[in-house]
Image 1 (cartoon, rainbow, N blue to C red):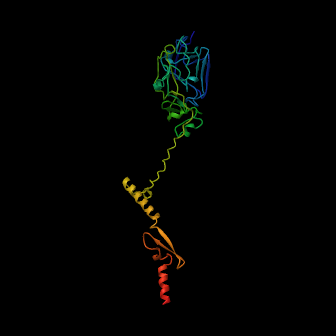
Image 2 (cartoon, rainbow, N blue to C red; image 1 turned 90 degrees about the vertical axis):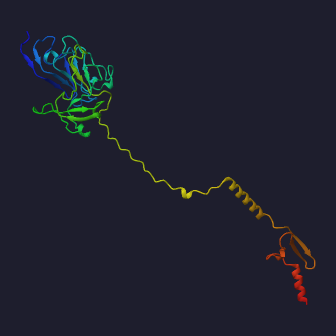
Image 3 (cartoon, rainbow, N blue to C red; image 1 turned 30 degrees about the vertical axis):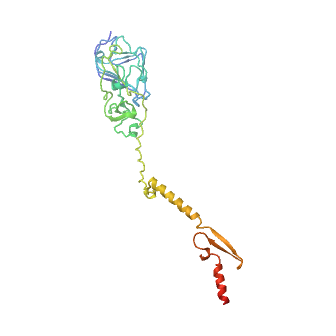
Length: 313
């Protein structure tokens, strides 16, 4: 016979990496066999050393493992994992059910899934963008410029330690927006009770990202370097700013051609005559002045004769 009594209190099971259950009872009582009065919620979380998408901790439940919360599932039964791929509960697992078993988790972001749904992106028993409790043993938050992180508690008075990680869509460590003090489940935005996925569905599973994201902080964007703007170069002084009408230019060319012809043409025809008395040649031009009147022309035969006659007198 079952012992009488009243079971009351919250149950919190959090693991830094993995949690594995084989034919176990996690919670207040097995609803299939117990009629005891129970009260209190049950929370199970894995991968608290890295609760973000990409965290490696897994939850394994096989061989008819049972999870339950108080009041025959009337109180909250919560699971916290980085992603669906961390959820290894099999189809023999019961969650606040007497006989109905768990509908195993689909692959990450596989149907049913709509990333535009935000926290409701997945199926009806899921809530996204809730990495929640984080034990930051490696001071990762400080690398991203965040304060308020915490580690796993090492004494009996520090509570659950760590801090609650807050992210913006699409989630993941690169989209961390802040940290706040609190216990597991303190950042959960909603509880989806009676979701109808596995039996009545008296539970909710909390995941992180709504799409594939990285597992490190993104580097700060480098501000663009403004281009060097040089002052415009003044080409005006190098430009030929005189303008000509087409007919003016034609007239100039014609005038230039006339000048060239005039420079090349002779002033007149020159003839040379032999004078036997003087035994010399004389030259005359048909047009223009006689060549003997020019400063550099030949000797004037008439002038020579006159000079000779005068000397003979």
